[in-house]
Length: 177
Length: 333
Image (cartoon, rainbow over all chains, first blue to last red):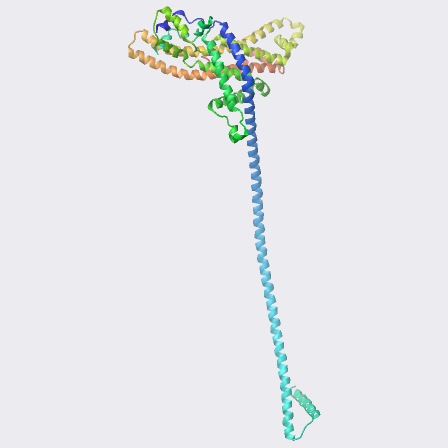
């Protein structure tokens, strides 16, 4: 307490008085500090800040470019997807039409084939019928000759047989008509 | 606390520069500001060298982490440098000048900032309190002991002598920029009002007047920097000391102990608030010193390009026209 009061008794001095030693010290100390900072500190910090700034700007630009590219890709993808959907729909439509056409063709072919088979069967039946009739006529003629031979009790030679058969057939044919 | 309060008998006694304990050792009056300057410079160098190593982009082996500044101390430096450069210096001075003067201006800023902040640390009070526990002798012995006990403390930038030396650096920087932009002949012509006026025989009598005004302006600009910093530092610390003095004044006025305690508590509370203001002022005045130096430097650079316009501006508003637009110019105690 006494100590500081004593200091006050000496007076604080002139606040704006000029002291040479502090001034010279300040000038020299700042000069030395500035020289060290200017060579060792500020170039490093400036370079780092520039690099960091360039990196950040570059990253932002790359991100914006990537976003633009992604957006373009998305648009392209959506467009492709729409095209693919349309193409798929067309293919399904085409497949259905083809299936229908093939089914119609098969059906028509089957019907035609069936008609041909029926026609062929009818022809076969007709020819079989004709053969049966001819055979029947032949057997009837032979039987008639045999019966007639027996009736006449005489042998009829082959020429007579043939003539008789021919006559019998003609008669039979004329009788049918 | 008693010592602190007692010191308030004259608030300036605790604010102005005092002799240090080194005076006896060196046989000359070594002020505390001298010690603070050297310690402050060491702090600045250690802080900024460390920060530069942490701000530097690391090797690729560190991966993405190499782009990140490590450590709070370095991050503070990075934020201050990046913010002040991109938001203040570059827009005001232009990219070319701001980049060229970045080392000088930021060295000035951090040097003044550290000195200002050192003034907020109560180093003198700690030493006085420590010394008060020692023995008490006669008044002469105590006075001698007090001179010998203070090794560091005080605010170096509260010394006009220190500030004038720093302002001298600012002055040299401004003139260096002038000579670099205009040349020696151009600078002299500028001091005489420009080549048009010098070559005009009819107006020869104006030249000495303009020369005197320009030379005064050359000196006043940096001198104003020194005085502004000095006034702000002394003003703030004086206010603090005055607040702390109220308790002692109440005690010496014979008030009851409860009243003395109440007044001391109230004044102490205000002192805490003022300390925060002082913290802000420490940053602000460092910024103002750096910023105005940059403005004066850029004025020299622009002189060659817009000589007439600049002169008209200065004639009307004085040499500190730019200072009027500075954020710190509105501040003052």
